[in-house]
Structures are given as C-alpha cells and as structure tokens.
Amino acid sequence: MRGGQLTQNPLFAPHMSEPSPVLLLSIRSIYAERIFKGEKHFELRKSLPKKRFSRVYLYESGGRGIVGCFEAGRVIHSPTPELWNEVRERATTKARFDAYFEGWSRGY
Image 1 (spheres, rainbow, N blue to C red):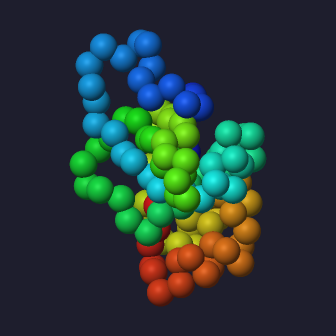
Image 2 (cartoon, rainbow, N blue to C red):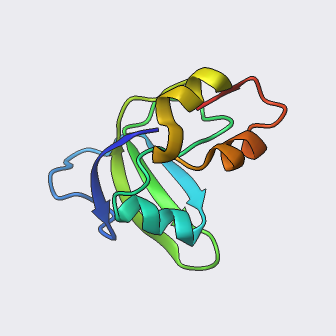
C-alpha cells in the first residue's frame, strides 16, 4: 500500500469532521521507523479486509501502541511477480519479499 500524507502520533486529523473507515496494521518498530523516515513507501500484506478504508493506523508491535497514521493511497492487489515489479526496494528486499510471500500467488 502506498500512503499519502503521513502523520506521526496524532490519532485524529483536525480536518476530519466525520469518522471514516480505518485500517489498523500491526508493524514492527524498524519498519515503522523506515516509513516515518520516508525510506519505505509500501507496506506489504498477504490479505486485507474487503471493506474499503481511507486511513491507516500503524500499531507498533512490542508495546508502543499506535505510533502514527496516514491516508491510504492506491491499494495494489497483484500476482506476486507483478507486485514486486511495482514496489521493489521501496517496500523491502527481494529476499524478504520472497520469504514473506512464499506459497502465495497474490499480494497487496
């Protein structure tokens, strides 16, 4: 997934007047840091909820809780070879990508 405007820490943006569907993603601290530094542009997942969402909250596993949020951009759902061609190192290394999606034909 590629996010738009990234906000760290505030849970509710001041411009939001009505609640909208959100997605809560559990993420390791090293990947959250890479996202906030602008080094990681895509978060890879094997599955996502069928319901559309507009905002993504990052829940840092290991006890820190929600560490930030961003407005969801375009969601890519493709066969894994095509997904890799789209995201490449802007998501992770090829070795980590292959290990994560081992046995899966498609990904997000």
